[in-house]
Image (cartoon, rainbow, N blue to C red; front, side, top):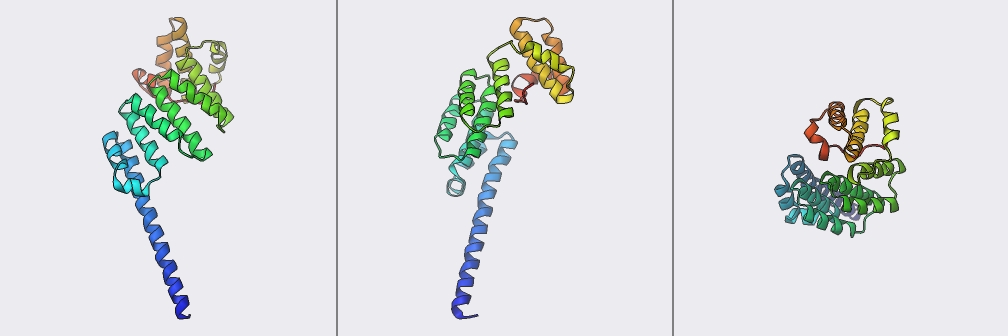
Length: 214
């Protein structure tokens, strides 16, 4: 191999090693933020996201979504809303946009923020959200957040054909409908929903995520 060839090969190797090292550092910083979220430590997430390493290595979207989830852990609704708005203004690809919308809906739904969930649902309808998933979000919004009761008979008819967590989810939705109309069976139905969802009754509200439409 000529001297020029050896030099070019050496340059390529240096570039590849540098790229791999940068990727490893970026992954490490991001994973540290995710581990802090899993441990329920929002302060550590925010401190890490604001650090020099994260600003240099992690994309604005990845840092932003980590901060959004940290604010959600802290139940800081206003900062959640501000961070969500910042994220929505980023030039996102379709996958990240849909992911942001679904994460945002789930977080605000846990806080029973009907107004923001309604706005996000409209954004979902204008985006490439899977039709089946969209129906699930729409049903959850209408029953749990908006208090609509017009799906009562359909869900009652479907319950006999369901089992496991799917049955528990249907029972939870139906319990929300019963609560809206003052039906005395709501407590018993919530107990059954908790049993099938393997949760405590007091964990249902805010703990039940959006499922596939019943």
